[in-house]
Amino acid sequence: MRRFSQSGIAVLTAALCLLPASILAQKPRPRAEAPIERPPADRPRPNLPPRWVERLQGMTPAEQEKFLNNNARFRSLPPEQQTRIRQRLQTWNNLSPQQRQTLQERERVLEQMTPEQRRYVRQTLLPRWQSLPQARRQVLLGKLRDLHSLSDSERAARLNDESFLTGLSPDERQMLRGLSNLRVGPPPA
Image 1 (cartoon, one colour):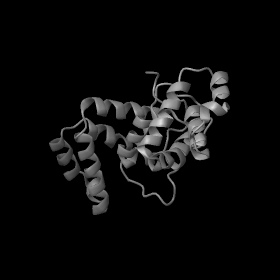
Image 2 (cartoon, helix red, strand yellow):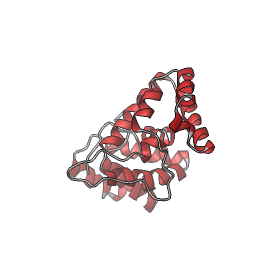
Image 3 (cartoon, one colour):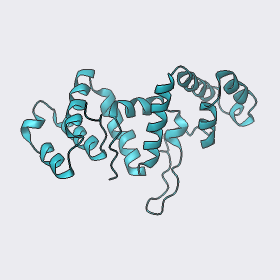
Image 4 (tube, one colour):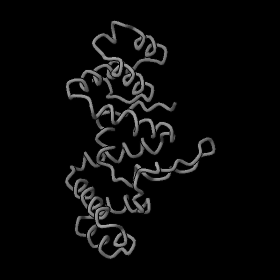
């Protein structure tokens, strides 16, 4: 698996929660080594061109509304989907410039992941992470911080060290290993 040394699960989680659905449902760019990933059949497709998101994010709220009102493709979407898109834009518009930059960086991280990694983050890690109480998230973030700057062999040794894993449930241990393999976690303090 490809490694991402600067990604933080807390920010990645926030990014996944706040990203427009079109980003997570986009078909990845074709790669020679990976087949094209299709959104799951049970997931509604946003029917938005991929460049819309970038374009809309760079507009003021008034410009966004004008763009959406004048766009036949957007107007042809079901009303509930139009509402979701507008709500996500409103969430985006309410973010600070630093929060927006952080989300854009996380979008780039997601784009660099293989389809398998994106699927694993979206379908496995994110739901598990969201179900954890805040106190348990902090424990895992601390463990990830401890693992962050270690070499692969040192990290593997720590992940097999019972004293390092003490207090973690089997599910938390598995999540820690998965996040560590992606090198997702906060940088050392």
